[in-house]
Image 1 (tube, rainbow, N blue to C red):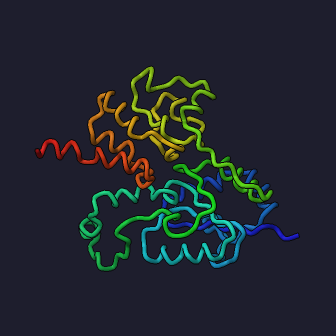
Image 2 (image 1 turned 60 degrees about the vertical axis):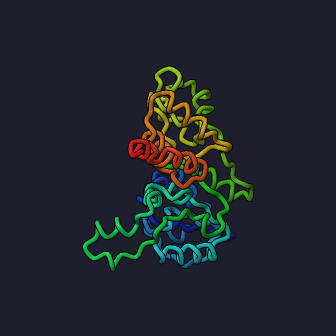
Image 3 (image 1 turned 120 degrees about the vertical axis):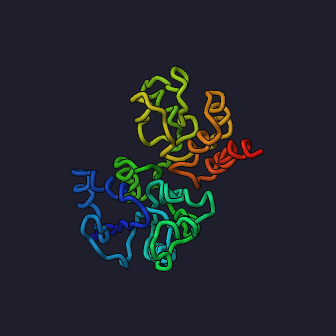
Length: 265
């Protein structure tokens, strides 16, 4: 019996989510006995055009070439799984979407901007092709990947955990840093998956796993204002790693440059 075929494709990203694969260690060796990895450049396999059962895609779409390549990846795969903040919501590179000044930044940075071929707006994978499963996180965690692969191998739908970080804090018996220390924690609107790592070490969550289901972002923004955060600081809370996630984008834009506009008035 042939093993399911898998590919791991990289687009615009830092490679951190691919490292989540490599960091699996012994679990990766066990998985490799159950499936056949045909394309994973960071691990040395190179068959980019191979037909596969599962294609994992890391990174956002930032160039015209990537727009064409993701369509080919979709055509060659039975299941397509986007992994990480860049693939699911544009990542840090999507910050350039906020000001609409792509050409000005490009011309200021590069000596020969005419050779730079980039899209004016960075795009998440699901905005261009159908995605069967999104794994959020910056980066994704290795247990997320193992759970998704095993579910797909057994022919069942992977669990999409949309619980809030706050619930994970309660399960971990972590003390709430916003209630006890007044820290502007994104836990009330952010999906778990990290095991509430930051709050357990006394740090406020900064939303790297993206919005939870029915996230009340506007309500949390008003709470941040009550804690004394200025408008730009509130905007940066929502417009950082997952700036193109709709609920974060909508709330962040309300406060984006609003402080400067008030001064201008």
